[in-house]
Amino acid sequence: MKRYFIIFGCICLLLSYSYGNTAPDCDPNNAGDSCSANIWNYPIYKNNTEALAGGLKISQVYRLGGDPDLLAVVHEPIGDFPSSPILDDFNISPISNNWAICPFPNNYPRQIVNGKMLGTVSDQSNQMYWSKEKFGPNMEISVTLSTLPMISNFIYLYNSFDFATLSGYEMIVTFGNPNTTIKSTLFYKWTNGSLAYLGGIIGGSITPGDKIGFQNINNILKGWIYHNGVWSELGQVVDNTYNWIGYIGLGTFDTSTQFDDVRGGTR
Image (cartoon, rainbow, N blue to C red; front, side):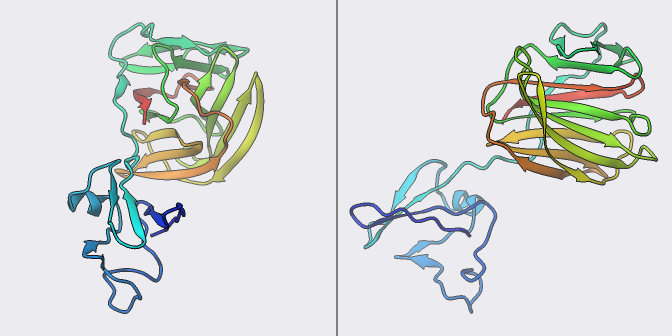
């Protein structure tokens, strides 16, 4: 448990416990640790789950009335990935007018074939965004890969994006040889049409039917993969440029990769 103290004029302390973490030398469950399981007969909770089970309410402030007077706040957890509903399962053809082509140079629309979303022009960008609504500032997108890109090809996901100015975040997942390996997950920032590299992660395995996700929570950009029935993090970078309401989008550089069940929304 990480503790943060703010001193007030009346010698008050504000305690905040980070979700799911435990202090290295103060665990009330360990008899040898130099701490108490109670403060003035009030229990110490290790995380939000325990605090809520003990009767505390999210966002409520609790004063213990002692000297010093401790204040405690239960913070709302972000939750697991993904938490957003399906926006489109591509069971209706042609493609819904909820989608719009991304205004990048030499970019082409996508199409619906047999209940899947795929590109229209091979060896070219085929990228679209969910134009029906904006999300955020915390937001996410994920998509099922019914078929995988060819060897050395890749997929794009967009987050917190303003397509009018071409500004926001992009994640590119590149596929190796064989195409069931992820060669790299790369994060980029667009600013008025200019692209800047933020960081990347090497490696990973993927199979048809797996899912890829891209999340921006408090300017922590995370890549996710659903593989072998479990969501796990591909990697993350931090960038404080864009914390706004924006669009989500996706695309490929081929016509063989088939998308299904796009999820997205505000966190």
